[in-house]
Amino acid sequence: MEYFPAPLEKLVEQFARLPGIGGKSAQRLAFYVLGLPEEEAREFSNAIIDAKKNVTCCPVCQNFTAGGLCPICASPKRDGSVICVVADPRDVAALERAREFNGRYHVLHGVLSPMNHVGPDDLAIKPLVDRVAKGGVEEVIMATNPDTEGEATAMYLARLLKPFQVKVTRLAYGIPVGGHLEFADDATLSRALEGRQEI
Ligand SMILES: [Zn+2]
Image (cartoon, rainbow, N blue to C red; front, side, top):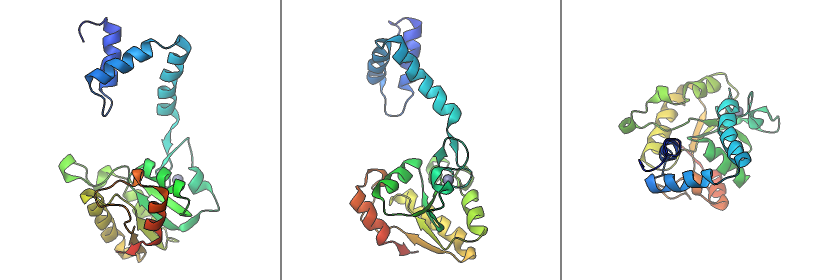
């Protein structure tokens, strides 16, 4: 990398920090950006600043939104008595695409992972317990991924919610063990929701 002028090297370094981008890819992306017309390069950098500045977490479900309540929490058409708990905002997008679920969501922003030092305080668990404690919730669907950490997180939350006497269910899979919700097709997701079981 020392063969490049300093500003270009800096750009390569920034791309290399992105997940899944190795040194060669970082160079390719930096060269691509350098080849853009100035206007397009500006749009690209503005999109980063704009997203960082204006994307917030919904105060109720913790999903990403552009300030205030997210559209799903704000919609009177969605059933507030059913909460579907997911690890990641991308899982909300996947389930919404399946058009099967008419309740509301709760986004944990991760799963429990002792190996990666992710504990209950690192996730949006307290806001979920607060929501359930407020009442009006009849069912909580655990829709974390069917891998070890997703299962452990679902079990942990089920125990935590037990005192509130809500029905806690787990998606029926459908989705292969070790698989990711994000990559499941719509039909699989619909079946998984329909066949959910109490845990
Ligand atoms: Zn929300």
